[in-house]
Image (cartoon, rainbow, N blue to C red; front, side, top):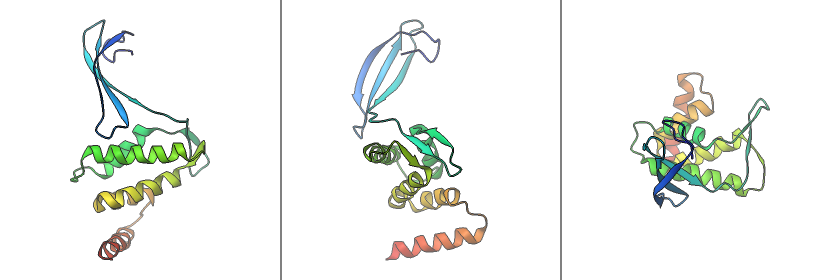
Length: 153
C-alpha cells in the first residue's frame, strides 16, 4: 500500500479489525519509509458497477461519492456517521447482487431517498431538493407537506 505522505510503496499492517457494520476491515498501517501511520479500509466488491446518468453518460460507481452526497444532506443533523455508512453499504450490496452491471442514477437516487426517509426527514428533504431539482420555494413546501402527512399516517 503506497504511503499517502511520502509515496513509499511498502507499509506494515499494525492493527486490523472489522468496522461497526461488519462490511469492511479497518487497517492501521505504518509506512516503512517515513514511519507515518494511516488507515485503510478493505471492502468486498462483488462486481464492477456502471452508473448511467440521465444524459446517457456512463461512469463507474463511486461509493465515496454516494456517501459524500448523503453526508451533505445529513450535515448538522443528529444522524450518526455509522448509520450513513450502513445506508451506503446496503445500497451498494443491493446494486451488486441485482445481477445488473449497469444501474441508472435515478434508481440509486430512489434508493437513497427511501433510506433517508427512515433516518431523518430534514436530510430526506435536502436530498430530494437536489435529486428532484426543486426550482422554487413552492416545490419545497409541497414536498415537505407530503413528508409531514406521511409521518402522521
